[in-house]
Image 1: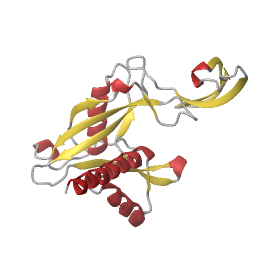
Image 2: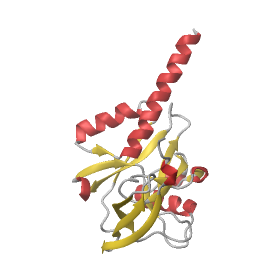
Image 3: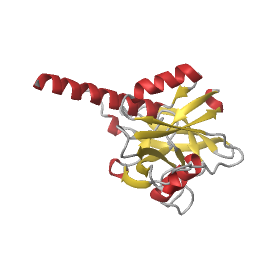
Image 4: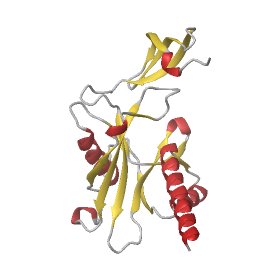
Length: 217
């Protein structure tokens, strides 16, 4: 009978090396069959006790009554580990004594210049892990709405630090995957996996909706 993955147990964590932002650890654990194994992992040094989370990732929807489809606000920045410009959802680390909502509002303003309103949190699903084979880094997904007619959002100006170089884009949700592919082909940039998964979910939803409509005709 195959053992359940829930039978695995952590035995020991040992530090291997540490930088300013990242700690490398060696994990000893018992696999579901009881065999002891080792694993290496990266850990952020900045996680706060307030939320138990490392970061927020923001689905920022820019709404305008005159537009056919809301637009998704994106950021483009050079990521040294990828040696490329990566197209991403706005995101950022949670500061000490800061709530998820406050972090999302702050990061959206700092990275894009937009003032938004939190409409949904991913808390009901628990913390979200973006690369669980490598790190325990976790985050909350925050959905925000931006009123394009708000005076503060007419000519948004990001509040970037001296070390930050970020371009902002806003693409319609309708046909998002196609727009992203065109952007990457034209600029030579690459996509963050979370953004790709979101765009693919929208694309599949459009296909399903189209097939339902065609079946009902």
